[in-house]
Image (cartoon, rainbow, N blue to C red; front, side, top):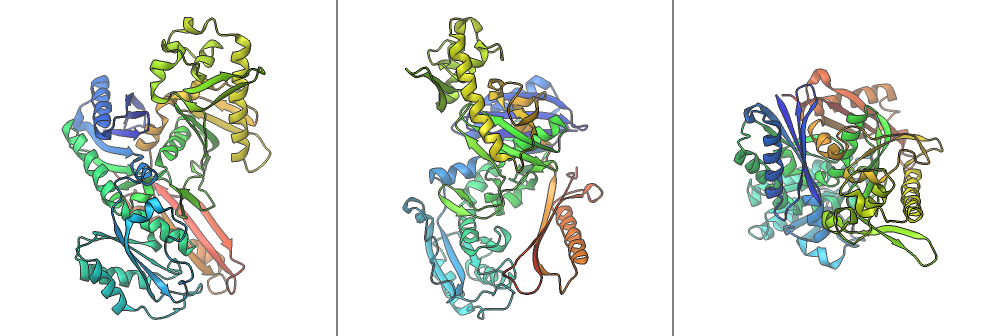
Length: 517
């Protein structure tokens, strides 16, 4: 039995095959194409030809894709939606999309704010205005196929959102796509609502990449595989789940690299540096999974608060352009030759000095033709390497939460430009298969369940509350497809909320287990 992992990046589509013992059987890089499925098919074709495995033995196929991120950033392929906010009159002071850029506001065809919603302690502000909700959905019928529903403090009580969704289906039919904010974001109405709007607008993109991936596999004769999508917490989701929550695929690329780095290095806690052709992403492995960002995250100019990996990106890659200034200083990037590196870099016969040329000149890497950079001044090359190290070492410091050195894992094809010693790093690892760590991370990912609630410890003692949350998280993981016996708790968090009555804490527990075969 084999697992197929595919990760679509901006420059390359990486694919790997892993056997039942999680050993890498084969890996390949294929240029990403304008039609991403041509790139996927090319990668899968090459991988199958390379390994010669029986297609019928591939039981699971996992895809990590940047399609949703690109759609938001580029303002393309986003569907028009209807937005219903439940929270009048309390939330009328800040209208929906108050801080959105004009070039993305088009996705909301019509919005309304109706009576209802909750206080922070779960008490109803006002009864849900069901007549107003029904009238709003009647007006949307035939105009949009996707609806976002948000409600003030729905993370405390979601009854009004669920009832509004029920009314929406009664009016608009069972095929309408409904995104509910309590299932997507965290505390904070505006950011949670924003994430829900984006999720609703991505439904066509989700249909395209889920159906396209399944079609690509079928075309290549991979017909016995269960298909999964990577999500941005380092775990997997089913095709149906991906269609419901496409927003959760945003930033799954760096997440897959972090998971792959953890698996390849056998480290559960470390900083991961993923170097591509244009940019370098830094993240943190925390107990084997990516560390989550604790602040609101902006995607394409839209502030959101759904879970996202804590990642720092810098303008440094294998194709970064190196320039010598008249005063003798040397700069590296942030501009890059990108996917044209095999044409424009000096080691490949081009005339542009890149970070890869510097690494080859200093004997750190053997790619292209080293003779083409033999005449490069060694002093200039060393100053360029000092500039590269300074960029990375500053970013390492940003990722650390203490002054202590941490282990560092280098992955990504561009990591050949980094040395074996970096300030702030206790030890630098570059594992085997480092170039396809993202696809490996996709292939070996687990299935998770996360339970989050506000609990007053004066009502339910802390020990009981956390035990109850642990049990709920395990059940959520099992329902998502994890084997119960393999599920383990990977994160427990309880944060006191001083502005809430009593001894209220936000309790969050995450569990993960192996995917059922």
